Length: 493
Image 1 (cartoon, rainbow, N blue to C red):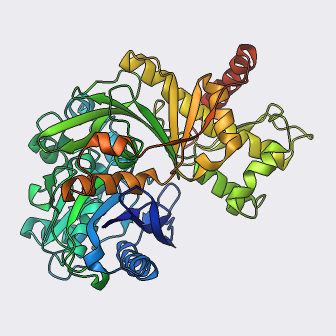
Image 2: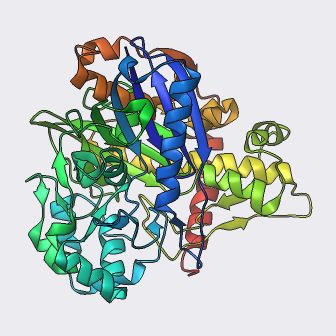
């Protein structure tokens, strides 16, 4: 038997079939259109997401020569915080999907901060109030669209993150639900009481009737009825992409850490059954929920990592394809003093500065495309290093090794630079598709395909370990230039 994982990300939608050994049997993928209606705004078309999901699921099952009876469960891993509202009667989206990267609800955040509510939100949700999260996106839509607000009041307009949108469509509108991990990223969910917060809903003017039911990450989310290739298959695992990757990396013990390099870079530490508050600009979040047991995590979200490489390709035109960055950056021994701060949508953890903007410093007549490419890889690694420092301080645990995954983890030069700037081992697993794999594990636990987390942990295998070759003076000089770059990038918006 197999598990089909829907991995709905920021730039693409994929369906991946895994067998009981955790090996990939088939993959189908479609890129997702990005819409930028105004500076700092990022939108998706929710219908495009759904249509792509249908297509990749049909294709991957067909190409693998399988049928619905061969698939024991469907799982979902999704881009988090992205906000979708839709009509329960027509099934149509009532607004563009506002992507997690989008800064368009920043004025709502400012109003919230001016009301003195920051500490209340942080205490209940574990999150630093920011336009990153779903709550202010939804509040903005309701404030700006009276018709939507009226529909919400009548119960005919509902909200969900992308997982909820997919579950609703997969089940033909029978289930409006989310899991604990995705709920914990809305900035509306009390992660201690495990319920939607009436205090926060009231503060933002959001009707509770709009919200999905919250369920454990491994369990029943209905049955697929709208995709022929999966008809009758239960949906048994749901998690936000970074939580799924943590699970897929078998980070099952407190202190285990992983970093996923995607559009952004997301570092997550398992803190066990204790929700550890952050005083260093990190987020306290739910890692996953199995039955009644909730595991918590600390997270540092870097908004731009792989997206910076895409900008070199599409914006500057110095790369034909993103993978070319490794060879270009490796053609020089260092960045020759060039510092690139890719704060295109502001700075995430631990800085949290929505006014920062992308900046390149230290250019001379001798600077080349190769130096900028190398500075881009350094920027990705240095942003992660900032999060590691904060995580060490908050957790009281010195991180001695970092597991990495995501598309850019296959870049050997980036992995080596990451080890160099951290001064610790960086470990790459044999299977980089840990996001889809983690959600598949959650579904497979519920279906009985895997009997325990110990069995899952035995599947994880190391591919390569990168060890630091940079001396301390070099590391200090690089960090000093980076700090100057960060400070100079602030206050542009």
